[in-house]
Every structure is written in structure tokens, then in C-alpha cells.
Length: 438
Image (cartoon, rainbow, N blue to C red; front, side):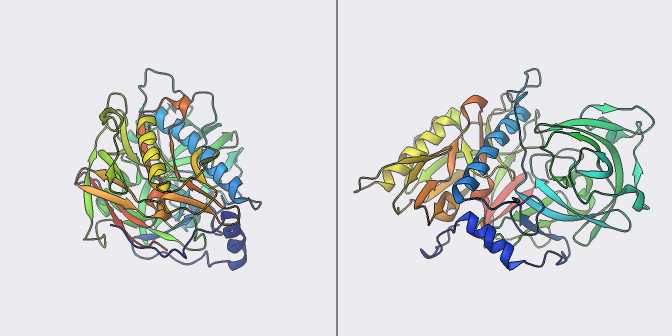
């Protein structure tokens, strides 16, 4: 599953990419085809989430890493026992989206850019009546002839958090980062690529307080009852895959491929595991990690799946840099440092939450995640972040934040970039194959 990469393909500075993105102005209006949607990075010129001002490389990395810290708090709150107050309660939990797709909602269709999130279920969008929403292009229900509110008696009203019935229509409340959100539960036609889905249930955001709510909305790709998979099972058989474009190529798009048709045939799988406490998350069995040719010594309990505590390993599209529980990360980091420094005296420095950085060029070993039935060997593009101007190279992984007390290992989107990741829910398996997404 490895692919040789040219040493000339050293990642460019993120701030240079921002400048290039502004200069090249890609065609953001290109149409999706069949059941395949284009996937854009949030820093793409086609994204409303891109920074309004250019950031230096260090600022960009630190910003993404800080949001990952908050994302880990959020994920831990999902798997924690419901009788326990979430550890991140009262703290900023910025569920910042990293990749977005186009969706058309209503009749006639209105185009919105939605964040794709494999760890959430229900879709929601800001609507024109929303108080506190910052989007410049909300969904306008009055302009859609197929829009309607769901009554309190609808079964979907029992599947949303904190449902309320002030009148005959179902509403619900949820938190998103520092934002408190109130939404009406509604249905309308949602078109993905060229596939219309009549009567799709989602949240029409009516009120938001705080600054964490994404500009457009969210498309949930989890395994819950209101997720895309559940609502389009007749169309896509609860199967999808994506290929995420690299940070280096902000002007290019990856793809979200819906349904079993046209999925890769030559791909290795690992079983999906079920956690009844959080059935939406995509748990897999990570059995070992190899650095170079050596399988590092990780305590078995650091990788073990435990549905009671939420311990284990998940694939997540919203986290940027892979996080491992402290014993696992320390073992991987120490072997990485040892391999890099063989025959050399190198000084290890820090950059924010990254504790394995170098100010001189290095030759990095491969890192292989060894799952049940499947190995994923990462190239340097998936394991290193570079600053050619500043001369800094860092291992693009970190330990779970100290104050989260997390038992969760998260395989994040930087490590998934330029791989086709296939979620085959009916057969309870997840596959990974190397693919140049851009």
C-alpha cells in the first residue's frame, strides 16, 4: 500500500498555498457527476471556511493543532459514559470542519457547502430566519416547494437531542463548540451529485449563540438513524468512500463516492467494531504500529477496544493530526526519534503540541498502522509537516491531550490523505487503498 514519492515533492508552506489559492482561482462551479461529489479542503478558494487573512506556516499548524485538541475533547465526550459529565463541559469544543462538499437542497435547488463529518449523524443548515447565524447564504425554506416541518408525532423527533414541542412542529437543541443551537426538524429534497433524495430529514437552524457554528452547515456521515447512510440506504446501501486531497494542493479536490458501484476492487479491509454507547463512530481494531521495520512495544491495553469505556481506535474525518493515547504515542515517537538520529546528533525541538521537530533535513522512517487483516503504510507526506522557509520538520502526530483523559486513538485526516477510505457498513468493514486524490 506504499507509493514511492519523489524527494522533490517536499510540502510547501501553508501560507504560500493560501497565496497560490487566491491567485489561481479554480472553477468552483464545476458540477458533480453520478453519485460522486467533489471534496474541498476548508482552506480551498471554494470554501467559506478559509482564513480571511493569510497565516504563516507556524500559525496555520498551531491553529489546526489547537482545533484538534478541542476535537479530541469533543470525541471523548461522545464515548464517555452518559452518567458522567463530559470532561470538556464548559470548555471551547470547536468541531471545526476540515473537508466540505456541495449539496443542493429544496425545489428549485439551493446550493450549500456542507462540512462532511464521519463522527456526526444528522445534517443541519442555517435557515433565513436564523438569529445569530453568520452565513451570507442561508437556506431559504420559503423558496422551496418541497419543504415542510416535521410534527412532534414523527418518529424522527425521538432521534434528535433534546426534542421540544412548543407548537405542533418538532424542534431540538444541541451544542456545537461554544455555540448553543436551536433548530426545527424539517424535510426537503436533498440532491447529492445528480441523485435527488426526497424527504431528507435535517435540522433547520433557527437560533445560534456563540461563534463556533460553521458558516454553512454539516453533513453527518456517521452510522446513526438520521445520518446520510441511514436515510439513503435504499440508494447507496450504506456504503461510501472518500479520497481526501492533500494540504499541499488546496486548489484541487478529492471525492466522496456514494454507493457500492465504482468502489475499488483491489482493497484490503479490517472489520468495523460496534460500540453500543456510541454506535455512530467507526471503531476498528488497531493491533500494532510499526516504525521502519520494528514493531514498537505498546501496552495491549493502550490499543484494546472496550465499548464500556469507549477505548479503542476510530477513523475520523474531522481531526487533522492522528492522536494516540500517551503510552502508544510515546512508543511510536521514541522509535521514530531513534531511527531518525541513527549515526547523527540531532536536536529535537517543539512546535506547539508537536514534540518531535527538527531544524535540519531528516530521513524519516515509514510508519505502518497494523489493523486486523490490513496494514496501512504511510509515506512521509502523511507523517511529516514541513516548513521549507523556516527549516522545520515535525512528526505530524501527537499524544491525546492531558486534560482529556482520553482512551481513544484517532486516525486523522492528514494520515488518510491520498488514500481511498471505504466504509462498507452492511459488511461491517473498512478498507484503505493508496490513491492520488488530487
